Length: 195
Image (cartoon, rainbow, N blue to C red):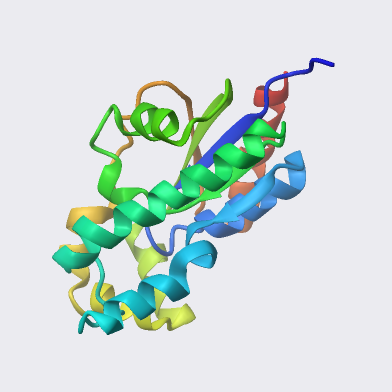
């Protein structure tokens, strides 16, 4: 029995952009399996950083995390996605991907390394303004956001408005300034991808 290719919806954006909310809505709308990087590996990352004597709340400026641990998180995410895609299940990958946006070959290299089958790949970049993101991070009050908020201007300049340069996918932007705008953008996106 043959059917349509499964789809991979890769939602990306910085902390507080609203990508997890958009990812979950996208999963509900399409029936795609929801895969969250933090759920899959967050506790292991925290334990690894603590075991190595590092502050688990400061990741972006920690070379051990960026060079040794973070690549393993993403490798695991792509591998679990590959397992689902091989079974014919579409997937939504929920992760920031911010450190990899400037590498045009990152997506193709990662999918090949994970052994993805033929798949329709859509990159969904979730965007919000600096003011909205900062307010969301302050409101949610997570330990992992403390370092970002402590040096907000430097964090936003480095990670806030980066564009995704990946080859090998369809790209879309969801403007997450409020729930109504994000829902409208997402509905248009889902209609376009299912046409």
